Amino acid sequence: MKKLLTLVLALMMVLCVAASAEGIIYIITPSTSNPFFKTEQDVGAPKAESLGYEVKCMSHDDDAAKQLEMFEAAINDKAVAIICDNAGADASIEAVRKASEAGIPTFLIDREINESGLAIAQIVADNAQGAAAIAEKWVEAMNYEGKYAELLGLESDTNCHVRSENYHAVIDQYDTLEMVSQQSANWDQTLAYEKTEAILQEHPEITGIICGNDTMACGATQACIDAGREDIKIIGLDGSDEAAAYIKDGKMVGTALQQIAAITELAIEQADAYIKDGTKPESEKQLVPCVAITAENVDKLSAFVYTGE
Image (tube, rainbow, N blue to C red; front, side, top):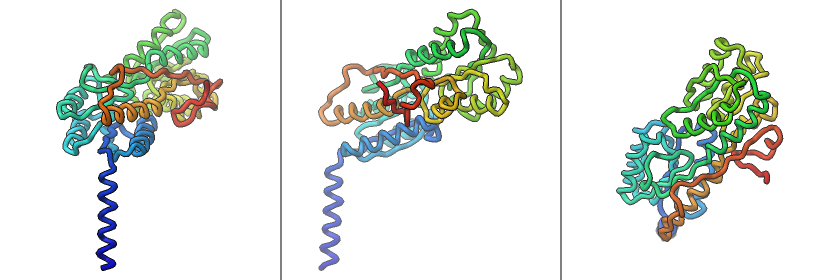
C-alpha cells in the first residue's frame, strides 16, 4: 500500500509539472564552440525556463540542411516557439517558412533572413553602427596611415557584408590607408590564424588587420604575436571575453560589443508575450546598438554584457 501511495504521489507530481509547463521552446544556434553562440544558449535557456517553458537547445553548425531538420523536429514536437541564430540569410528562408506554415512563431536573433513576414521578430545588433564606431578607433590607432589586411566572415551571412561595408565607409575616407589583402576566414579562429600567417609572409609591410568578428580577430592577434609582430593594430566585432583579454594586454585595439545576451533575453520575452496573448513586437526588424570597446572601457565588459553608462 505504501509503495502504491508513493507511486501515485510521484505520478501526480509529474502531471503537475507537465500541466504547469507553457510548452517547448527550441533554441537553435551555430556551433557553441564559439563563445558568442554559446552565450545565446546559456542566456536563453534559463530565461525561458524561468518563464515556465521546457527548452531544447541545438546547434546547426552553419549547415542549412541540418537547420531544416531541427526546425522539422520542432514542428513535430509541437514547439510553441523557435529562437534561432540562422545558418544563412537566403538558405534559412525555407525553414522559417515551414515553421510559420505550421503555426510555430520564429524569433531570429543576431542574423537576419532576406525575407520579411515569416518571422515574428528579427532582432540583431546594429552591425553598421558598431562597425563604423570601432573603425573610427582603429584609424586613430593607425594614425590615419599604413597598409592593412581584412579578414571577412562567412560570405553567405548578411553580417559579413554589413560589417565590411561599414568598416570601409570610415577607412576609405583616408587615401593614406591602403588595403593590400582581403580574404575570408569564415568566422573561424584557426583559419584566421592560418590566413594571417600567410598574409604576414606575403605582405610584411602591413601595420593593421580588420576582422569581421572577434573569433577571427583573436586568431589573427595570436598569429601576429607568434610572428613577433605585436605592432599590428587589430580590431574585431562581437565583444567576447577572449578579445577583451587581448585588448587589456594591449595586443588588440578594440572590438564592438554586440549585446547578444540582451538580444537573446529580448527574443525570449517577445516570444513569451506572443505565446501567451498574441502580442507582436511593434516592428519585425529591430536593431540593438553596439558599444565600441577599447582599453579605456574594456574593464566594464564581461560575458557579452557591458556595465558602463
